[in-house]
Image 1 (cartoon, helix red, strand yellow):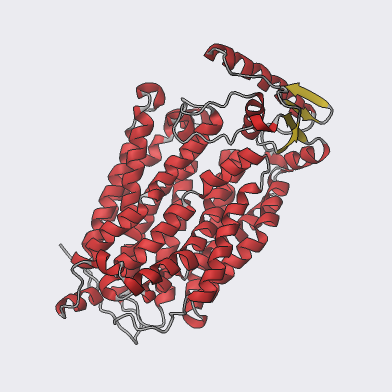
Image 2 (cartoon, one colour):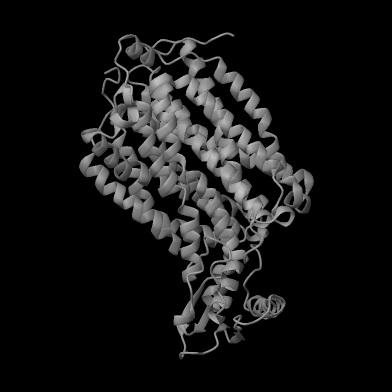
Length: 554
C-alpha cells in the first residue's frame, strides 16, 4: 500500500505532497457530506415515504426532525471520535467515520417504506440517521485538523477553506445527482422509487473514498507530539478541564452557533422555503439553489485567504451581522421574485382564520399519534399551512366554529373530535376542496408559476445568502484549530463545532417551519436564525480573541 507523506512547513509553500494531502482529504469529505445531505435534499419525498401515518403537516415536521436527529448525535460522535483521533491519530479515525457514513447511506436506499413495514420504517430510518450523525461528528474535526497541521503558517485560512468548500460541494453533488435522476425517470417514478438511486449509488463513492483515505499518512504534528511523549491519554477529560471548557463554551456561543444558523438558513432552509412554502417546482428549486451554490463556492476560498490577512474573527462576525440585518428583506424578495402570485393574492385577498383562539394548537407532534389536532381551528390552519398560504387568526366568540375568510368568501371548517377515521377523511376532503376553490378564485396559485419566476433576481438573492455562508464558514476551521493545543485539538474543536452545527443549525428547518405553521407568517421562522446570529455576534465580539498569527505547534 502506497502512502502520501508531507511535512509541516512553518515558513514555506506547500509541496506537491502537501497538495495531495489536501486534495485527498477534501475529496473524501465531499463524498461524506454528499451522503449526509441526500436526506435533507429529499426531505419532502421521505416525509411521504416514511411518515405517511400522520397528517401532512406533522409528517413534514417529523421528517425534518429525523433529518435533525443526525445533527443531534453529532456532538457525541465528536466526543468519541475526537478522543480517538487525539489518542491514535487523525488518519485512521476518519477512515472509520467514512465507512460508517457510507454503509448507513446505502442502507437507506434499500429500506422498505411505511406502507410496507409500518412504524419499523421510520424507526430504522432514524437509527441510520443517528449512525450518519455519529460518523459526521468524527469526520469534520479530523479533516480540518489534518489539513491545518500540514499547512504552512500564513496559509491555514486558505488551505482549510478547501475543507470548508466540501460541505457545499457535497450538497451541490447531491442536488445534481437527484436532478439527473428526476429528469431521466420523470417525477412520478422518481418519487415512487427513483429517489433510492442516489442513496444506492453512494456505495461507489464509499469505495473511492476509502481508497483515497488509505493513501494518506499521519499528520506530522501528531507524529511529532507522539514522538515527544506529549500526547493526552484522556483527551475528552482534558478538554473538559477549567479554562479549556470555558473556551469551548465561548466558542460554541460566540462562533459556531451563529455560523451554523447562517449556514443552514442560507442553504437548507432556503431550499425548503422554495419547495415547501413557496411551492416552487422541485426541479426548478434544485436548479436555482445549485446555481447560487456554484456562483458562491469560490468565496469560501476567498474569505479563507482574506482571514490569513485581516483575521478570522471579524469576517465571521460580519457574516452574522449581515445575516441578522438582511434576512427579512432577502426572504421577502425571494417570495416576490419566485412566487409573486401568493404575494399579490395575500395583499388583495388576505386569508384570515376566524376562530376561538383557545382552540388553536401549536401543531407539533414529535411522537406520531400522541397528540390529536381535532379542533376546527386546527383543521383550518393546517390546511392553509399545507397550501403555503400566509394567514392571520382573528378572535371569535368562545365555542365558535372556525372559518376561513379569503377576500369576501367564507369557508366553514369542521370539528374532527368524535368522528371516525373515514368521516374525518371525507370532511377534510370536502373542506379542502371548498378552500381550494376560494383560494383559486382569490388568485392564490396552487403552485408557483414557473413562467413568472424572475430567475436572475431569485438566484441573486440566494447567492447573497450563500455569500453569508462563505463568510462565516470559510475561516471557521482555521479559527477553531488555532484556538486549541495539539494534544486535545481534535476533541476540543469538534465538540463546540458539532454542538453548534448539530443542535443550533440542524434543528433550524424543523423549528422554523413549525413557527411558520403556527403563526401563518411566512417569515416568522427567520426569528430563530436571526436571534442566534445576534447572540454569537455579541459574545464573539466581546469574549473571543483573534488567532491568525498563533503557533499551532505548541
